[in-house]
Length: 149
Image 1 (cartoon, helix red, strand yellow):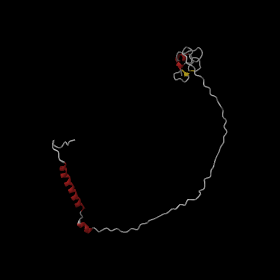
Image 2 (cartoon, rainbow, N blue to C red):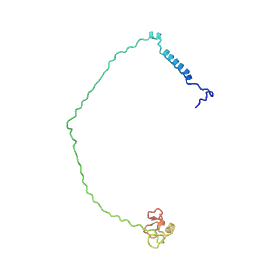
Image 3 (cartoon, rainbow, N blue to C red):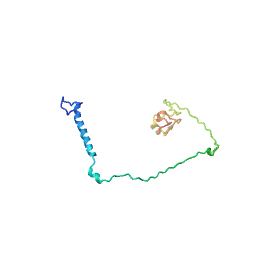
Image 4 (cartoon, rainbow, N blue to C red):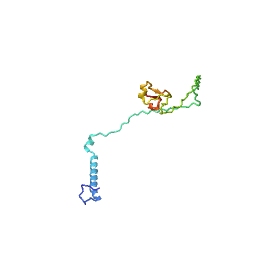
């Protein structure tokens, strides 16, 4: 990357940069010496400060703990509670799913068949459940066993 402020074809050599840095450091050095110089008139007015001894308080505390040879064991308490419960056994029987038959029986048995839910409502049979006459899978949209809800 070239410096846009330098004329084309003219670059300063590395030693040329030292022409600015070294005099600047020398100037800063001499200013620092001048700032650190003491004023002789201020020396006469000021009294020298001397450190005065101050009493201090020091406190030391020593704590010694002696372990006992045999600590007492905590008492052991065991609580046992017995409860008698009567259990009633139930048997769950799952009905085999009915095959959906669109041939006219409706899957619910009997000879009743509804084309759609409007026909079932018109006949007064809505809602129809699995096993009811006229039930068919085409009437049960969510598959929960109740058609034309």
